[in-house]
Length: 188
Image (cartoon, rainbow, N blue to C red; front, side, top):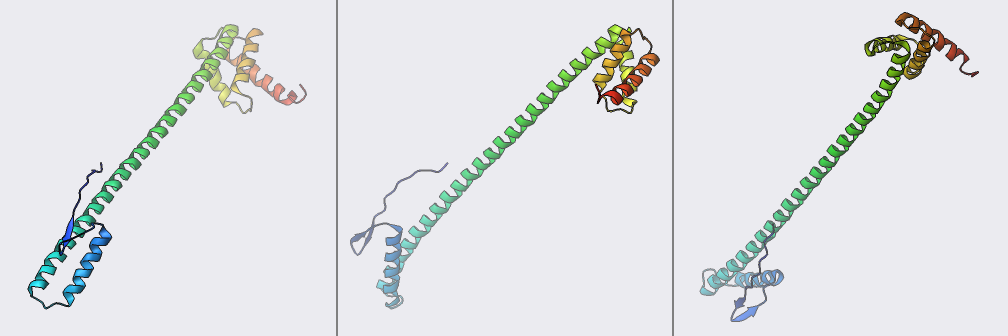
């Protein structure tokens, strides 16, 4: 976090206080440098001006470092906020993926429950076990048809109602009924 500090620096040049704004410190330093350029190198006045110029440069250097520190602290804060934002975005994506997965699982469970109900109907009318109905559905998958497996199982249900109770007879009935249904579908 950025530190807050207040300090007051007073500058006196030739017994006169100057304001301590950066602009004024630079102006005073430039004035002293210009005056020093007209002096004899090594004179007492030249050395005194050099001392004051070093003090002013030191103040400007410290000011520049403080600005750099503040900038780096703001950059660090910005980076952390961006990382947090990416983290939040990442969490959002994770939650969306989890939500999608849960929705898919719910739909799958619903579909399985519906298919299980259809299997139960076929089992009631044909006398087949659950495993036998699953085997029957494997043969339905091998059929060359656009008819859904749900509709094929409904035809198997009808076959059971008609007294057909072997896998071969039910399969033959479903195949024949499907052909008729597809052929006559547009007329029904």
